[in-house]
Length: 98
Image 1: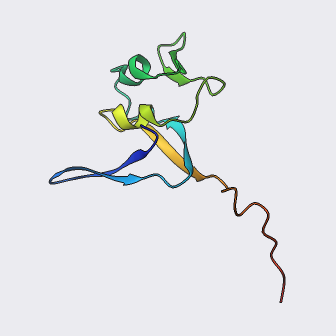
Image 2: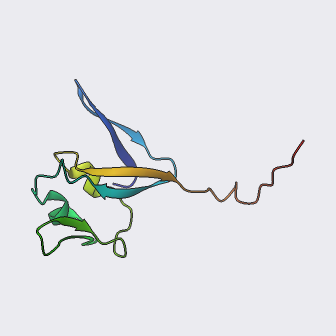
């Protein structure tokens, strides 16, 4: 599941793209959330819970940034903020000023 991410819905279905060393930091958009609990039921790391006021929340200490919650939400209520991760071959590069 970490290999692909949903880009958009098209007339032919859902188009996907291969993820390029990026991580999904999920955020719940409460205006769009209908409390269907799909994300809660299908989170492989049990990182999504329901608080005392019946709001769906994400426990970022348990979240492994897999993006399953954003892909399975039928209402698009889990917004994925894609943050690129540094690749190992670029970490040692130095930039020189001209």
